[in-house]
Length: 577
Ligand SMILES: Cc1cc2nc3c(=O)[nH]c(=O)nc-3n(C[C@H](O)[C@H](O)[C@H](O)COP(=O)(O)OP(=O)(O)OC[C@H]3O[C@@H](n4cnc5c(N)ncnc54)[C@H](O)[C@@H]3O)c2cc1C
Image 1: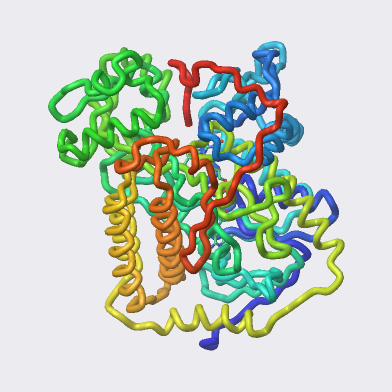
Image 2: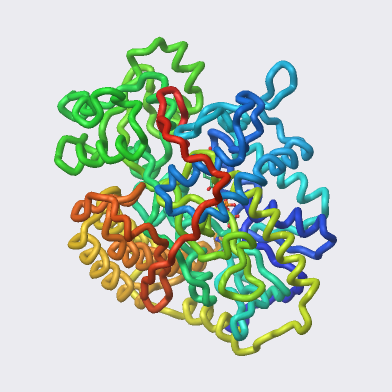
């Protein structure tokens, strides 16, 4: 083991991930009297969840008393183009109101009306106002609330452990292995059950609304190598407007509210191109249409120097911009030294949300590995081919509570605890082997190569030729990965983390390309230039296994309680994040 110190610890349930999903599971476990250790690889108050801005859904009916969980379910299934699992969707929509009750009880400062009711606003494609929010900092408020509550109920939390392997013996999990990101000390954590809440894979595209080193696909690698199947990996939501410049900020979200407030999209020739794509709704068209329009303008050569289009709000009064879009004003000043009250923003579609992920049971979120549960953005089932804005935070809280309860039950009922020395040794050697590798390749440029190929071959619009070329390029990058040089230095073990992130990205990219090839249709966020129509026989989930096999999984029918009455999905002035 290279003489590096190893810390060993045991807990009843290990939670991997300190975002909304992981924290909510950990709170439930502690509430049930379980010993729980919750770990993450990034500062506890800065998980990806803090980026969520717009809000969280629950059919509370505080503003629109006609709202119901059934209508919430209908909106979710319809927006997901019928690929969401109706059982999971029903659980989500029934339970979301009590998730909000918990948040309020634990002190979350959600917006209120003067009479004390929670304020709920419209989000795109919802029939009623059902999105609760805390300004445009909803994710941060939820993260802080859950973090505070976790401390109150005695959750042990560490935010310096990078998990490199889930420990499994004969398809039953018994812990995880990893290292301290600061000093490289190894961690061997044994547990009766593991809750896995490690996020998505949207950072494998060049433009992504995730920050550096998060959502690199490591969740998918860890789960798949532990024996889990992945599902619908091709289904990735592209937000129409992310920053394109400067390069290090590429992908950072430009809120839909800019268009809601009257922002105009133009190409490099100054043409208001939405007149050609949706002459009626123009910039307020549905997000997938605007994303497709932006993509087409850029790919057909009418984009800007930085391969974006222009989003202009400067025709509005400066004071109005500052009062309605303060976060955007600050974002462009800080990141691009650009005053959006004077100049247009350069934007392009950005990879935003992983609808696919680890295959789970629709109610319990148990995975294929006994004792292992997956939850939050790393899991799949609720969102189908397109996520309804505001449903992700709700999913984290609803299923976080459920997996907490399930893992507690599993641990309490466990007859025999297993350990497997070979599995632990394999995890140790995996790190040792990386640390002694000497070669001419470095993780960052290879990550970049993955992001380039995914953007060019598997972006907003896909085709068989492009996807096959993506697979060939990916194989070439995987070959170079074998010559990686990993050198932790005095500043920490980031280099080792990058090496594992790269492995995660390679696996997540392969699964995404394989599934995108198999889905020979256009549905929701998945656009195939060579199959531009919806194919009824493809109303199935695609299940991917480590050997590259993709199989079709039928969906159960939806409940007769759910009302699918025809109606307008998108209306102007509704936010979409
Ligand atoms: C700009 C933006 C705006 C959004 N707005 C909304 C919104 O308004 N409403 C909404 O519902 N959703 C929104 N979303 C989506 C939502 O924020 C996320 O889907 C959600 O927060 C995911 O939470 P999570 O707990 O599943 O994962 P994360 O918050 O991503 O947490 C993952 C955790 O896993 C840990 N981890 C990962 N890999 C490892 C490893 N190898 N070892 C150890 N730890 C690891 C990380 O450190 C982290 O603690 C938005 C997303 C973005 C980017």
